[in-house]
Length: 209
Image 1 (tube, rainbow, N blue to C red):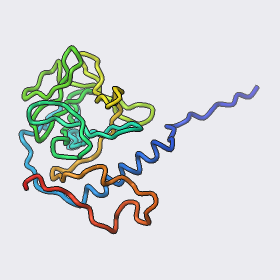
Image 2: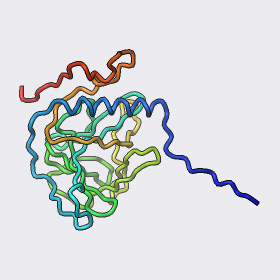
Image 3: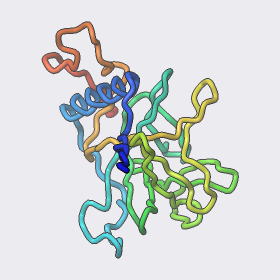
């Protein structure tokens, strides 16, 4: 008797997810064109004994969205953890592996660690607490990143205006020089002959003004 083995299926791409990836591509293409210098405040030491290569510390934006809105995670200077539609310097994080599957996430501009307490409340701490500032980094079947508190098991998530939790993140590569760009200005215009605005100007606001 012959047995037919079903081929395993990879991640499924819906029209919404396809538009999302096109939108993210537009952000990254425009984001690489303008920058201003921004010094790092006390970066996480690259001293992980498990991973000895230089790529263990990643500078990333953490982007999430749903059908109604899109956000970048940020830690403000007073330690508040929020979401913003504007890509800015408070949304750049150092993500460092401290052991297999466990990462520490630190806001570069705020110089604060992303932490979660026993009530699953997110906050930015000036000092590192192993129990509250370590997260399991998981990859979902749809190729999103999820972050769960190692100690308290709560998910890193942002609540939308409709009360929905947004916990599926896409880490976007970020350079140390960062511009402030309104994400809404980078949405793809499918009716345009230049949907990625490659031939036009990209306007960025200067926070020093």
